[in-house]
Length: 136
Image (cartoon, rainbow, N blue to C red):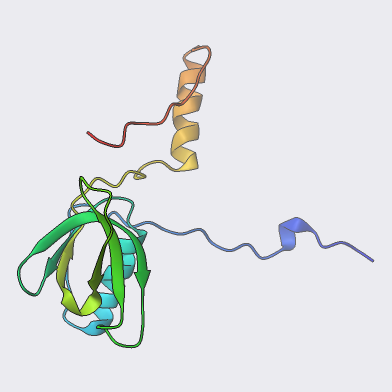
């Protein structure tokens, strides 16, 4: 039996990350709110949630549970500066802002290789890439 050629197999496209840093998402419909909260979940930085009562919470969204109704759907986040977990119903969200630095922006494999090749071409020895500090 012939084995399939790996180059001929279907390959799923990677995730494209939008540059959302600094944007504010004010939904005009339930579908737009759900879309914005999905983008916030995929975002790799802090977001600021404004509730309908005017209060705000800034933090990192680590979980979301979408259900049929907005009141049964919720996001879970770590508020900035604490280790507690907070749940917010989708129905409580008036708007959200992508306020934190996207910690993975510009960190693609291609960007890493470009920097590595530049250092190598400059004759640098013992090239290593260390992780950046997350907090400024």
